[in-house]
Structure formats: C-alpha cells, structure tokens
Length: 142
Image 1 (cartoon, helix red, strand yellow):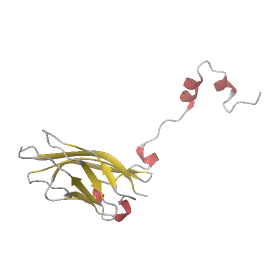
Image 2 (tube, rainbow, N blue to C red):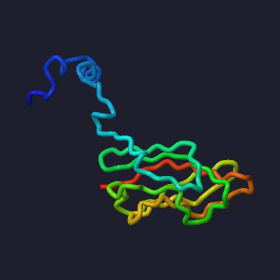
Image 3 (spheres, helix red, strand yellow):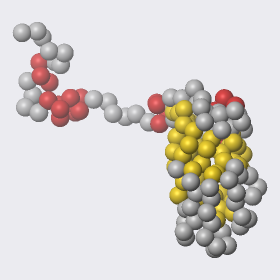
C-alpha cells in the first residue's frame, strides 16, 4: 500500500480531520487574500444620498453593497453612482437585483461596462416622499 501524504501520527489518528486542523495554521486575514476597500473608486450622484456604501475587490471581482435614497422622482437609466477608475469597470454589462423599502421597488441595477455607470431600471416609487434602493452584488473586472 502506498505511503499516505499525511504523517503517520495524523494518518493513524482516530479523528483525522481534527488532527489535521489542530496542526493547521488558520491565522489568515483579509490582507492575506488581497481584499481591498475600493469604496473611493465610486463617485455618487448628487441626486442620491447614501446611507452606506461599501466596495471591496478580491481576485478580479468587485463586491458592492449600498443603500441610497432620493426625494426626486427616479426614472429608468438614472445613474446613482459611477466608477471613477476604468481599471475597475466590469468586463461585461452586469445586472444586479435591487431591493426597495416601504413598497418602493426597482427591476434591476445595471453596471455599464463602457462607462462604469451604475444605473437603475424600472423604479417604482410608492408615493412616499423618499425612494430607497438597496443593492448587494458583485461583478468581474479583470
């Protein structure tokens, strides 16, 4: 029988998984994985107020999470934000689902590959003064 890759003590342990984990160095951080805060790579529309905005890149992907609100009447194609560094434009147009609040809704948010614009489509405000949008998603940029 061929020799196992594990040492004899690990191979013969009653619980191999626990023995391996006991010997593993699991002290990794976001820096070890190259996770970088890229929130400053986005410029927001003055028509929208952002309650929060987070953008993190990792291994060629951008993960974004934000909530914004406007008191104006939103229309399809409104750009709520723009990527201000073409290095981080998506490799293809990307569609993310949107979440509303107090009955507000939108069909989707599209990130335009050629301009870096984050545009909303088919917003449906429900007559309350503010229109809220919440987005969570990711796209490929390299």
